Structures are given as C-alpha cells and as structure tokens.
Image (tube, rainbow, N blue to C red; front, side, top):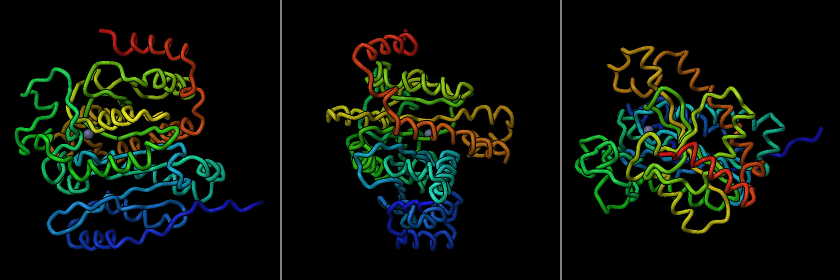
Amino acid sequence: MNAVPAVTSPLFRSPVAEAMREAMAGGMDFPEMRDLLDLTENLHGLARVDVLDTIAHRGRAFPLISVAFGPDDPRAPVLALFGGVHGLERIGTRIVLSYLRTLSELARWDRITREMLKTTRIVLFPLVNPVGMLLKRRSNGNGVDLMRNSPVRADGIGRWHLFAGHSISPRLPWYQGTAGAPMEAEAQAVCKLVREEIFPASIALVVDVHSGYGNRDRIWFPYARTRDPFPRVPEVLALKGLLDSTYPHHIYCVEPQSRQYVTHGDLWDYLYDDYHARGAPGHFIPFTLELGSWVWVRKNWWQLFDRLGAFNPHLPHREQRALRRHLHLFDFLYRAVQSPEPWAAMGDGSRERLMGHAVGLWYAK
Ligand SMILES: [Zn+2]
C-alpha cells in the first residue's frame, strides 16, 4: 500500500498564540479560545494556520486565527466556514471547531479525505470576534455589531428601526459603528481572508454560523439588504435540489435572508457585491447558517435568565446534537465545491428556467 503524502504546512508556533495562552492563564480564559489554540497547535503537517490580525483588549492581543486545509493555490475550489461573528453565539464557534476537529482527524487517516484535499480546500475562521465572546457580548469590544458594520445600505429602512443597524450609540445593540469610519479590525480580517483565499477560487461556498433566530435551522443566502433576487439564485436553487435529493431528510429551510428581515451593513452582501463588481468568472456564494435557537428556549425557558441563553443550547444533550447535526451539511458542501457541474455549469436556458422557479418560490410578493 502506498503511503498517502502529507498535506504541506508549516508548524503553528505563533508568539501571538503563546501570548494568548499567558493571558488565559491570567484570567482571560474562555473555552472556545482554548479549544481553538489546542486544535491548531496539533495540526502539524495537516493544514496552514495563520494569525490574520490581533485585537487589543485590556493590554492583551487576541489573535484572529484562520486554518486552511488543501493545496496552497487560491484558485482551487474552496469551502469556507466562519463562526463567532457575534460573541454571544458561542455555539457557532463550537460547531466550526467541531468540524475542524473531525476534519483534522480524517486528514490524518482517511484516504478519501486526503485525496479530496489534494485538489480542494477548506478554510476555517472559527472565532471572528474573540473579545465579544470573552465579554459575552453580541458586538465586538468597541460595541460594534460586526454583521452591521459594512458600508452597505438596505432598502427602505427608517432611522429608528434599530435592529436593522444604526449609528446612534454603541450602548445600544446592533450599532453599526460611526458612519463613514473604516470597518472594524475583525470585519476587515474577514474581508481580507475572503478576498485573498476565496475570491480567486473557481468555485467557492461559504457558511457563516449564527444563532438566535427562529424555530428551525435556516440556510440563508444573500441579500440581507434588499428583497430583490440574488444574481446567483439559479445556482442556489440547483444546489438546494441536490441537497434535497441527496439528503431527503435534511432539516434546513433554504431561503434568502431578506425573506425574514432586512439589515444594513451585512458583511456577506458587501463581499458578494465586491466580487460581482470585479466580474470574477467563478462562483462565490456566501451562506449564513442561522440556528433556530427558539426551540432550545421553548423546551427550557429558564435559560432566558442567562445572558447567553437565547443563543445557545444549555443542556448537554442539546449541545451535542447541535455539534453533530451540521457535519453532513459541511460534508455535502465540500463535495459540491469539488463536483460543481450539476449546480454551477448550467446553460443559459436552464439558468433562466431556474430563475423563474426561484422567483416564484422565494420572491413572490
Ligand atoms: Zn449572529
């Protein structure tokens, strides 16, 4: 039997990570950061680990860590996972870390995974907002809601519709930051990673994991800023058709985010518009996985008395269920970037037909 060659990678021995460990020993400890450091330090030879930036808080530098499996060529197809944009939504980071753990094990011993990683990448940014997570806040350390922080403006929203994003005060939730100011460092790190690692790819799917809305798990695609159809809606519908036929018992409601609510400043709208404006020839579809956390609250209402309660499962068996139930979705999407022909290589006639179906399904007034 031939030995499977290791995926190339330098070791992850970052002074920033070492400094973070020191800060955690000094009382700035939280389990998601600890797990992220433990996992990334054990990826020797399996993946590339980068510190995209650091966020200063109480004299310490919190690292923004990304992990990339697969070839170094940014044109190679890619699945990218993000978590922890909102610091209260710890379960999102835990889900991405759970996938990172499974993937790093598979990359050690499973020949099929190692074969796929020769041509197809997986990029993970599990903890976008570490200071928000440490402080148990939705926003970052500056009080800014990172998912309202891009310059994108939504259609027809009044100034006092705070939930959609506002520039009134960082003391109120959903604060977008000062109008016209540069985006927050965490949001810029997301943009940098996406522009460098995702935009050049021939095929790119993104999943950004959130929680706190609704009774079921939703897969949202852009736009958040408008109820107009997303230009890649035929590809999304074809992908949904593959998901429905391949996993007929899946749990997801797939829909445009604007079907539930419209917001200013969505990072994925901003990045998609940027990608589209560049006329890039590939496919880049950013999804949000919004976990239906109201179910956890309905079954366990006293968790509402906890600040994190509306956003995370409290009982261990519910958390374990959340950590395992999305693994097949990530696996499906990874296969879909490696085998894109059924959803991304349509002729004009098929696209037009699917656009008509999608408009009827998702955009009918
Ligand atoms: Zn969120």
